[in-house]
Image 1 (cartoon, one colour):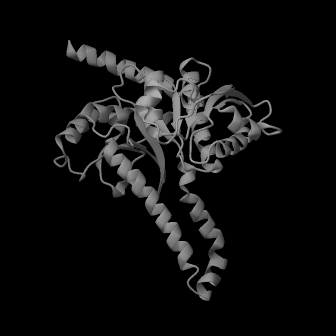
Image 2 (image 1 turned 120 degrees about the vertical axis):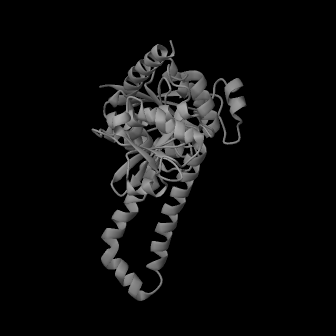
Image 3 (image 1 turned 60 degrees about the vertical axis):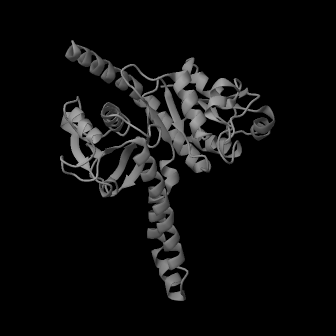
Length: 343
């Protein structure tokens, strides 16, 4: 299967260098993927000169404008028509690419992606999803900040999208879905989460619905998909990243505390390297916009080339799994069923 991805070369704290280096990693993994790279000529072209790894694997498109971290979403939408971010998303909207990756301004990226790609029929709001490590492997978290306030219907749709993603992209035969609440009892929680509970329990994924879960269930791996509103999800995401940084920092400091500790590190080095890799947030880099008419991945702005290459991995997996075809089919059926119920 031939895949074409569009890349915003100017997005991120260390662009375009990190983006180019990430592409150098990705082209070795995916000989069937072609990349369309959007950026300013003066910044990108010097990095492409004599770059043998990318020769014949990318098409560079020069853009005259850049969406900066300070750019307001309204300006990105109404102005900057030739920005690398807009043009890379536009390539997906016009069918020249199947997916887009940017590490740029999150608010601007979300606004442009929603405007240019538009939300799928039957889905009220797209959700921002990501993967996170657990004791049992990985779990899908959504929403992570795109929708600070959510209705019960939004949460039901997030649950369905997350279940389909886990089944078709992560290849889990029967992914279990949990809804975050202040307790596992059905009597607890706000009216919105209680209504969402009932909606999910009566939806097409009812057999895969675990029920309410609490915060500590996330890292335990109690379920494969964790559903919550964007406010809660963003707090969970940032707190989780902080805990991983804190744990790795304490490990490093502990092994520097004495000569015995340094000797212990010598013998435990292999195990600690495995732990460091397991907790490396770069391996989970890539926020996924689920529910748009096109694959859109948001890389962390501060990532390095290794992290950016993992965002590309995610985009390739989503395209080759044809996840959007499954989402379209599912929500077309849901919409048709709802129309019958409402008659």
